[in-house]
Length: 448
Image (cartoon, rainbow, N blue to C red):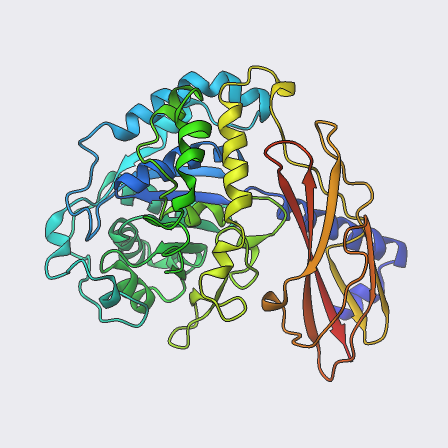
């Protein structure tokens, strides 16, 4: 192979390199492929309203109604979800004025399924989440369970030739996914490894026995275990949001907002989809990066299981630090549901960085970052804020940034004894009300 490469003209090699780099850049811009599983609890109703406003940002493959140890019978027999889809249908003509990528009502209906709501599959499990954590005992195996429309859809999606990751969100239990993985392993053994390796499953707690089953019996699945939603997004965590929900979501904001069932932000499941929002933080590119959906670290028990990481020693901070930005964005998107013209609502700034987002330098070299081409699509004034997300990188030393409110940033790479990484976050905020923030993450690799 090396001899063949030596015989290729250098111009051809350069062209090939540029072509491959362009393909890689395009792949990074692909929307995350997402499956949502919900147990229909009241906070799921609230999360679903918010999520519907972000369906333009993902390649939504399925929404599956399930059960959990907290909602043992599930709620698919009720029409809460259908009412939300009907309301979405009414506001869709306005939404596409602000982002043409929103799926149609018909599309959403066509990818809605019922999964596992069999209460007997929860036998012996108590509603005590501390017993269902990574490394816990396996409480069931799903070999004798019947397939469901939801589990069959997961199997179908994973068997596709598409090599992109499939992000499965467990807002409730994961039993439906467990049955799908079992079927893949037994019915499609020749395709199992290829199919199962694509799965990244974001779990809001382990709300049934599926988590412990999957991490043991299907170890190639990447499992994210989020417990830090408690105290940041769950019940009574955002008590200062009563007026926000009343005035900016429920009242005079169209039929979808009117369905919001709670009086303040109480959306324990929202981090599961906030993880995939393409806002420039690249949250879902790597569990350790951190963003609206939190930051994770590898479990010491399993190779592909990740648990909540701490920012500055605080397990809640990796989610909590972004809450205000996320809520302002939600408020704006709810405005989209009633704004019949693009100019009648706000839209997030566009961040343009000169050069690449991953930079390798040697100690002592000057790093120069330029975001002067950034702009606001509504013509609002924008402000800049550069900062080091220290917890996301490996370098633990002190680097002082100056002029962090300018369009450009320069600093000298610190002295290191081994290869280290630094994550620089650029926040670009507009001057509208509410102000929206877009981001850019630049990863600096420093070599000795």
